[in-house]
Each structure stands twice: as structure tokens, then as C-alpha cells.
Amino acid sequence: MLDLKYVVENLEEVREILHKRGAEARASIDTIAEKAEKRRRVIHRLQELRTGQNQANALMAKLDKKSGAFAQQRDALRQIASEIKGLESEHREIEAEISNLLLHVPNLPADSTPVGKDASDNPLVRSWGQKPEFDFEPKDHTDLGLALGIIDFERATKISGARFSFLLGHGSRMIRALMAFMLDLHGEEHGYTEIWSPVIVKDETMRGTGQLPKFAADSFRIDWSWDEHQENQGHDLYLIPTAEVPVTNFHAGEILDAEQLPVTHVAYTACFRSEAGSYGKDTRGLIRQHQFDKVELVRVERPDQGEAALEKLTAHAEEVLKRLELHYQVVLLCSGDLGFGSRKTYDLEVWLPGQKAYREISSCSWYGDFQSRRANIRFRPAKGEKPKFVHTLNGSGLAIGRTFVAILEQYQQKDGSVRVPDALIPYMGGVEVVKARES
Image (tube, rainbow, N blue to C red):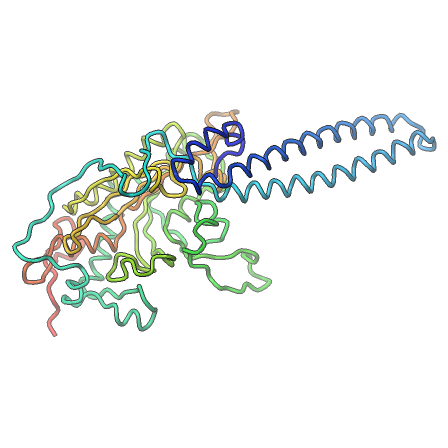
């Protein structure tokens, strides 16, 4: 959420910055400015009335309670109190309207975010490794997985519907291996504290990281009827779209000591997305599933360390691909392709030879104080100083299913088998090659 005071005091600058995101992003700014001015007038009038109320009370204390002057002052006070009550109600309504409008306004891109219209304007930052070369026509992961007997879409569709999958044998083992490998790397070498989190969260938790109200259609809301004894009565509940949601909100409503920063967490979770509006796109295979697995990196930083921490977090996500020896590239998202809450984002795109394309495998973002304002996460710079909002960051470290896809496609062999990356062999119980199961 943007700072209302900053928006109002820098209206033209905010309009211009949001223009880089597209016309839609600017739509609410004029309305917010109008309501903020109305709010200012109401607050000013309330201050005048309360001052008058205090003066009248002080005067009444000196008057004879049986005198006409006392009765006159009492009637005047009742009128003031009535006007105050009406203005307080109006003030609450305006505050709610402004808050709701601000929830729909995206974050302001950082100065270092390039200006552009869409993904075609995203500059390439760097690439690592070489595209694997084959003396045969490489298959995509779907054909490979089906032939190896490690993926089953048909039975998953039977029991759950489209865009779900079963992984079997060494397929399932590799998902587990990737999870353990990533958690070990980020925890033991990169210093993140591992955290095991709930996958069901309240609506206010989803709002804290920006999933609501913007992405309500893309979220799985749980149709659950709480009885009168349940503590969560009155809240809608959601399946998480990413561990970013519960882990960022871990410190919601708290004031941290400066010495506690940075807070760094790594979490594995199953993730759930309805993929609203994506019908017909990536419906084949594992790329765009309703349920998928990720290892997520979350950082809570001092404001002056936010952008630098993005470089560190991105490097940590890249290290997974390097250890697995998977060819990839890094692109910097332009303003027109930037996520709703992000100030600056790097996408890691892994090469998929079966699709002859690079596909996103991690998105690493710096949110500034956009999420911390929503979730009310602050820190105290020093004893006695006023608390400030922290900066939050997150990124996939990595998306496990897409890493599995990349291994199948980059490590495939002519006979249809798939080599296991050296770094993963210890986690696979020594298995070096995934072959078709004997019937």
C-alpha cells in the first residue's frame, strides 16, 4: 500500500511514475486526492469543534448550574457534540474509502526499474552456462515423463480435475530430493532460517502481501462454515498461492528491534492458484498447475538495505540453478511487466529444450514498504526513536516443479532416460539415471 501522505503531497510525481505502469494504474489517484482533501477539511473542522467543546466545558464549570447561561452553554455543547459525532462518522467512512482505493493502487517502480510496455521490453541482465546440445530431437517433459512412467495426468484428472498430476517412483523421489537440496543450500550455506508454515490463511493475511483484493479471482477461497465456537469466525480463509503470504506476515502487527534485521526465512510449501484467465495457456504438462511446490526465500530488511538485498536474494536463487548445472538467463522486468506490489524484480528463466524456449523458474522482488504498510510490520531504528516500516523481499528459491521439468529436458538422453544432476545424486539415494520402469 502506498503512503497516503506521500501520494497527496507528490501527486504529479505519483501520476507520472504510475504512467510508466500503464493508464489503469493511474485511475484511482485523482479520486484518492479528492477524498484526501475532503478528509483534511473534516479533520480541520473536528479540531475546531473539539477546541470549542473544551472551551465551553471550561466556561460551564464556572457557571451556576441553575442559571440561564449554563442552560444556553449546555444546549450549545449538545449541538457541538452532535456535529462532532456526525463528522467522526464521515471521517471513518472517508478513511475506509481511501484505504480501499489504496489497496487497488500498485507500487511505484524503483528508479532502477527500466521503463517499458511489456515482457518484450525486459532487458537481459546475464546468462549462465550453455544450452545443452543433442544429437537427437529433444522431447518435452510431458512426453519424457509419460514414457518413463513417472508422471500421470490422466488419473489425477480423474480424481481432482484438470491441471493436477501424480508423480511416481523416481519422479516423486526427485521432487523430494529437490526440496531437501534447496532447503539445505539456503539454510546451511546462505543462512536463512527454515520455517514450516500453514497453507491456510485468513483474508487479512492475503491482504497483507497484496494478494487481496487484486488477485481474488486467482485465489482458492475455502468454503467453510465456522460455527459460533470457532476463533476464526468472521474471516474468509484461503489456500496460499505462495509461502510469501504466511512467511512475510509472520511479523504482522509487530515492531522489531533494529538488531533483529535482517530477518531471513526459507520455507517449503505446497501452493495453490486457480490460474484465472489462463485457460488455453500451458495446459499441457507441469508448467501451470493448480497445485505446485516451491521453496520460497523471504527477507525483512532495513529500508536502506532493501535494493541491495534484492541482489543478494537473486544470487541465492541463481545458486540452485548453478549447482544443478541448468542453463538459465536473468531478465530485469520493465515497468509495464512489473508485478502489482513490486518496486523491482528479476526473473530467472531456465532453458527448456523440448519447448525451445526460456521459462520463468523464479521471480525475485523488492517490495519496499508496500507490503509492510498493509501488514503493519515496523522496526525501531534506535531506542526512543519512532518506528519505521521495514522493506520486504521474496523470491522462489526455486519453483520445484519447474526445476523438475528443466532437469528432465536438459538432462534427457537419446534412449529416453534422464541423467540426475551430480548435486542431486546424494539426495536421490545414489540414483544416477532415471529409466523407464520395467513392467
